[in-house]
Amino acid sequence: MSDPTPTVAVFRPDDERRSEAASLLESLGVEPVPDPMLAVESTGEVPRTDADYAIFTSKTAADLLAETDWDPGESTVVAIGPATADALEAVGYEVDVVPEEYTSSGLVAHLGESADVDLDGARVEVARSDHGSQVLLDGLEAAGAYLHETILYRLVRPDGSGESAELAAEGGLDAACFTSSLTVEHFLEAAEERGIREEALSGLEGTLVGVIGEPTAETAGERGVPVDFVSSEATFEALATETVARLFGDDVE
Image (cartoon, rainbow, N blue to C red; front, side, top):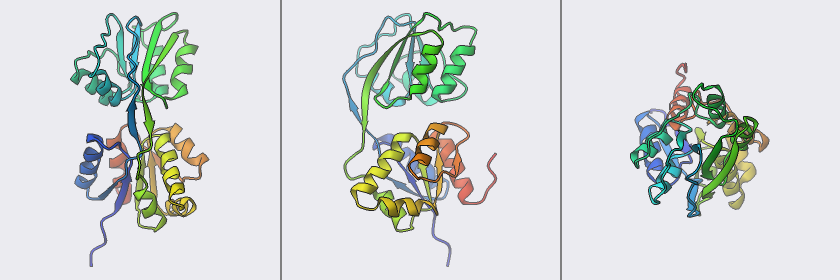
């Protein structure tokens, strides 16, 4: 009798990202357990138009901009990574800057080291969710920028989330892919809501846990979630591919 197909929990929002994540994992030979831990609530706010630099940190921000008449004017448009850049360009915005490292700290470092960027005294607009990293704001302020933050959307936990916590508590989960600190927090909230927090945490001890970014790893560690590795790139594709490679005992470069 053949071994059962490994199960991998993913926490992408319940939109095309959920189906894309599931399709990717299936193509890699595992059984996805889609359990959305994030839902988007738009605030209706629009970024300022008088900034020298306009920074966007997610594909969701681009999707929301498409529903507005925001015009970047003379602003230099900055995307935290290629997925965000592609989404911005898909809705008609030209992206000028994408860092090599797709994280808040990587973005700050890239802007600070670029000969074409001078943040000292520059007006910088940061448009993102209500759970954006403080690292980005602190780094920009330290570089001398005048900051304005626009909260485009709030991230909340969807009703009914927690299937993966149930599976972890039962010992039926082989791996979990956490893409942000908030997915860790919401996973544990869902487990608590179902009365199985300790059982779910115990189940994760025997589960391969991969995360995107050191901040997510730190959040997980602080809350008792064991982390086996941080993906080499801050993308879901890298996280998923490296998770499956480890499950099957393959080398990960």
